[in-house]
Length: 239
Image (cartoon, rainbow, N blue to C red; front, side, top):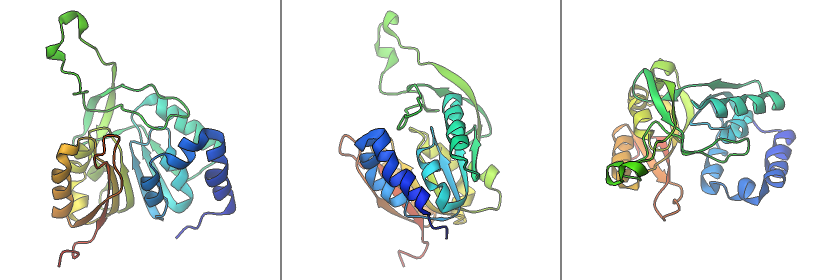
């Protein structure tokens, strides 16, 4: 177990709230942050790392951190932050984890900046606007870029992950399908998943339960719907 030293406490518990404001330091995903930052271990995967909010915070608590982020702008910012902080145990992976190996379009709904809290950029095309219902002159074209995709199973092989955070703006089921072998074998000990479509809550719980995971909902989204789930591998908890 890695115990944070005083420099980590000073940087993340004191200086970050001062520099970035109360919202960023204190209220941003408060329940999720409390859960995630209470864990430690050998390996942490941050899937949908954006500019590294969680990857940077958890680096002192894990032996190895892999930050997966397909957006080149976010990758550039994250690498700069890592270099400035002189952190040695974060590997930035410019990839989108999904359920296939190849390439896909990443839809850019959010402009990434250095102090960005999160983004809506996703492999899933925005479904909130029904383009077919709009007049031709009002149709909206979402900018996108081609990114490389791969699966968690192909990268992990026979390895293990102590904690996996998944925040991929609607593509979470793709990530889980691409990790099906590791999940079925219990080689991902804990997951924190952001669910972007509350109508799929039962589906997500079913996937977790069928693979031996105990699910605990951590918080609610803006509309009062369940948002983040903590899943812990515990195949005997129903017995």
